[in-house]
Image 1 (cartoon, protein in one colour):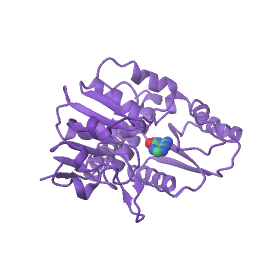
Image 2 (cartoon, rainbow, N blue to C red):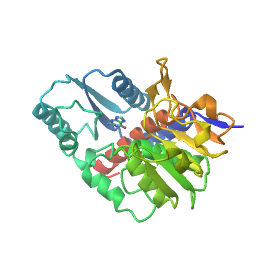
Image 3 (tube, protein in one colour):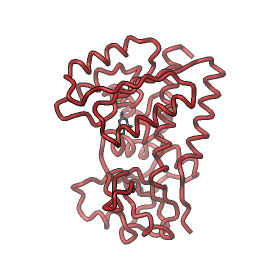
Length: 285
Ligand code: GUN
């Protein structure tokens, strides 16, 4: 029988600990969220991030800018927030419109306010880690959420064969690094991977972050494998779906995470944790 994992109970636990720490330290972390345009998916993510801030008593600033904004005007906004002492963390919701250089914008975020771990400096700090003690660095939110869940599920990662599907800078690339530091043998798969079904066939854990609704079926997966679904996309009927064909894999996998309300809430909880982490550092707490 497959264990179905919902993210919300785990997220609640993380957020309760954050709330308590804020009270103990008498600190009110502040997060600024910048969104360009009105993509429905991005709008919904941003709404959930602001909602989490409100739940926790964080200060939040929701900045919605037109999608045709000039690159320099966006940079000016980031500079303004960089100098604002009530703002400990700056989040620029990705993807950005095509006329804006994403890497250039990311590098304008001060590293001590880089809540997503997007900057070269913070990614470099992760890259140069020699063990899985991540306490002294900032981690990207979704990979941190996935690692947290695997720990909560008490899965021993030592020597496990794990496939990560998707090599993005936000999820696949950093997550594969973190899992290898936790002594897993990691295969990082992507759109040009040949014979994906053969690659996946012997994996103990498969983590997918490609956004192709119901793409992975049980014929591709070892029986009793652990499946972590980071994909969210609309299926042919317009329903929000994960990368794993949930109905097909139920009672084949040992564990599968839900979409929606699976990894998503953990990502938000980790964003809140990162915001507190940055606020503590900036206030020497
Ligand atoms: N777009 C999709 N996921 C994320 C995320 O975690 N952070 C930001 N800033 N943008 C995203």
